[in-house]
Every structure is written in C-alpha cells, then in structure tokens.
Image 1 (tube, rainbow, N blue to C red):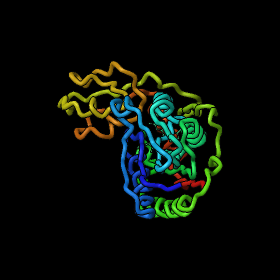
Image 2: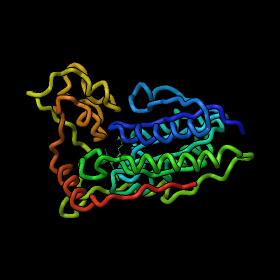
Image 3: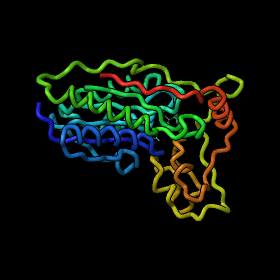
Length: 273
Ligand SMILES: Cc1cc2nc3c(=O)[nH]c(=O)nc-3n(C[C@H](O)[C@H](O)[C@H](O)COP(=O)(O)O)c2cc1C
C-alpha cells in the first residue's frame, strides 16, 4: 500500500474544524513527505460535487459535533459525496467542551460505508460556536502539539502497512440518540426554528453572511431575511465583520447560559489508533 497524497476534508462553519483538520493533515504530509490537498466541504456548492479518492490517499475528514452527532443536515452529503475507493481515513470530530457523545462513532461508520478504511480517529475540543466561554481559544498551542504527536503515530502506523487494518474502534454508537439541549432550569428546550436576527444599524447588506452560510439560508439581496433552513452553526454571527448578526431566541439563550454554568472546565482531546 503506497501512499501518494494526503487530503484534508472538512465541514467547518466557524473555523475550528478547519484549523484542527489542517494542522493534523499538514503534520502528516510533512512526516510522510507527501503533497497535501485541502477540500472545504462547508458551502452548499462545495457539497454539491462528488469527491473520489483512491487507495493511494490518506484522507483526514472532519466535522463538528452537533447535539452529540454528525450535523444531521450535512450527514446526507458525507454519505453520498465522499467516495473512499479504498483510501485510508482519519475521522476527526470537534466538540465545544460538552461532549462528543456519538459523533465520532457515527463519522467512522459513515466513512467505512463510503469505502474508506479508518486507521485512526480523534475527538478534539474547539471553541463552542455558541459561546467563547466553552473551549475558549481552542485549538490552542497545546492542542497543536497533541495533533503533531498524533500525526507522528499515524505516520508510523501507515507507512509500513501491508494489509488493510481492522476499522478503528471508538466510543459511542453510530445510531445513538441526539443530545437534547437543556435550559438553565435543567428542562429540555427547543430552538429548532430559531434564526439569526440582523442589527440593521450595523449591517451594510454586504452579503458576506449569505455567501458563507453553509445552508444557503440567507437571502443575498436582503440579508435580514432568512428564508432557508438555519442549522444554528453561528457561521454568520462569527464571521460578520460588522457584528450585525445575533440570536435572541429565549430557549437558545437559556441553553447557552446552562452550558456556561456547567461545562467550562477544560476537556481533554481523545485519540484512537
Ligand atoms: C448546532 C450546534 C450544536 C452543537 N452541539 C454540541 C454538542 O453536542 N457537544 C459539544 O461539545 N459541542 C457542541 N457544539 C459545539 C461545536 O461542536 C464546536 O463549536 C465546534 O468546534 C464547531 O466547529 P466549527 O468551528 O468547525 O464550526 C455544537 C455547536 C452547534 C453550532
């Protein structure tokens, strides 16, 4: 099994999965002395194409954890657009310092079903898209060091592979229950219908949020309108340079407050080889 290319493939509305996957893939490319190719899988147009790999590829595939699973609106694209063709894969999930629950097990199962052979996997902490107070500043320099040492171990594992390894074993159940968000009083809350609001005194209608939205949900002609499905990824909130987007849904805000009260103690990354 002779490897020729390393790929970084990532769905990353607020950038932590992008950073983590690319740091790992760069370290792998350096260690194995192979070229690296990056494929963002974030915007709708990027997920409308098919991606074919071969048994000469090692592909690091990353997604954030949403409600303890792979984001459910993106899952169909992970299932149908990525074609492993016998490539080796390293599934990576990000989580915002609460828990990754079943997301890594689900991503591993999806990639095996897509025709990849999983050789290692990792769950890494990233700043929570909902609030800076969970996973603040992560991935940080310590995370980068852990990613580099993980890359060294993966490189050692794959460089002399003579046969396809058994699928990597990780905690969680690929079909496990979605996490139910809770409010400050501990009772379940629902904010599925919440959409970003626009501060019209700050917004210049530049259209950046509409171009960046992974669901294509925002009207590019009038960005205060959100006719499409919002997955609460916070891409528009985090990337608007005028800070004009925000969520004011009471159930959403109560959930964020609950997270801030209970999940600020820094969690550890977990790797599996
Ligand atoms: C809709 C939504 C649901 C989330 N659910 C979880 C979760 O169940 N557990 C957790 O620890 N973090 C959760 N997070 C936090 C993300 O996993 C984390 O912020 C991730 O780093 C974001 O990746 P990105 O920067 O690539 O967009 C959630 C974030 C969003 C937007």
